Image 1 (cartoon, rainbow, N blue to C red):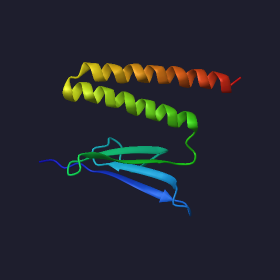
Image 2: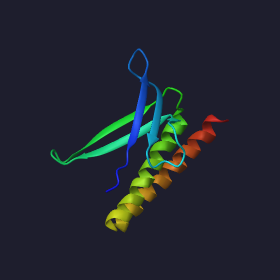
Image 3: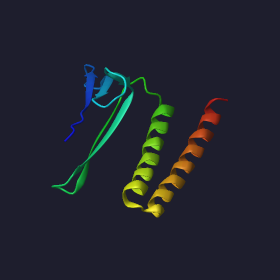
Image 4: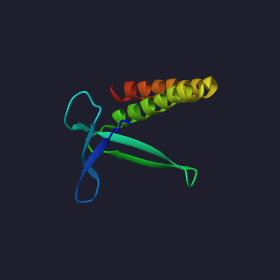
Length: 114
């Protein structure tokens, strides 16, 4: 059986806020840790039948990037639901929501760039 590892290294400032986030994976094409501005990790706690979440981001991640990141996360979840369960309804509803959110963010960006 093959094993695969994903590792995160978080450098914290004096207030314990993420200053730098590095990640690495044993199956990654390029060797070595890579920097990122944000991670969102969700783990199903089978014992308590609930989801455990870890959301971290660095101070240099802009609000626009944060919004885009979470829209992408939602879209990916919709695709995963479709692939894993075949539930087209949930997948499509998530896609519709993502489309609305993209439109909102685009309109918001137009207002602030004027």
